[in-house]
Length: 322
Image (cartoon, rainbow, N blue to C red; front, side, top):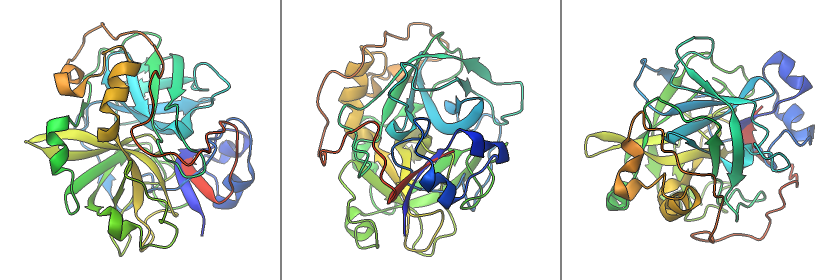
């Protein structure tokens, strides 16, 4: 089986607003992420979210189509997946982001252009390790931001804990994306258990597996880069970023998420302090002091397999984007 990232390919095939695994596998244009590793359906097995339930949810567009998800974590900053970023373009290839709306065709969201986007400097396209990136907005957003898990809360991100993933991705493997923001609850699976599933031996400590052994609920294509939340101390905090998986909602093939708690120092340094979960600055709403786009300045928190070629394509792994 093939590993699929959860972004959506942007190009001629998008006229159908969906792509099959085969189509995604053969398209090697610069518009698609190096790897399409499938982690969950555009929320498969879930439900339409209530308006305002998930502050900070962002729809990320390429060539006019919603291609990935993201999270507004400071007025000028959005967190997404590294595999969503086109490194040959300063703005990551993003035509715009839309913040604070549940319906993609609705008028309640705030549209912003992107002046810079960059991946974690040790992102591995072959294994999807360090699959995290930052988007800097041309103009700060006035919408509420999401809260990122703090260092003090990391001990509660454990196997068995219930989490919620949200996004506008496809509602079935290879299916159509959703016009409505959707959500689905999935439990965290231990790394040791996750590694026993076929195709999941490359799980690292920078990843979180979440899902059911029986399948049926998952994130999917178009959800890449979107948030995985956990309710801790009575508040929904982001603990993960949609990264990859084997198909969508298959049995013994859970979704895999970047463990954002391993990147708190990177987020703070890369945004010149604008994103600092431990200081509580990411809970500020409506501020226009978003920091500057400094870019990555230090090494990864954990391992890397050495494959960071920004333009490589590995047909054995697929990310969830169109």
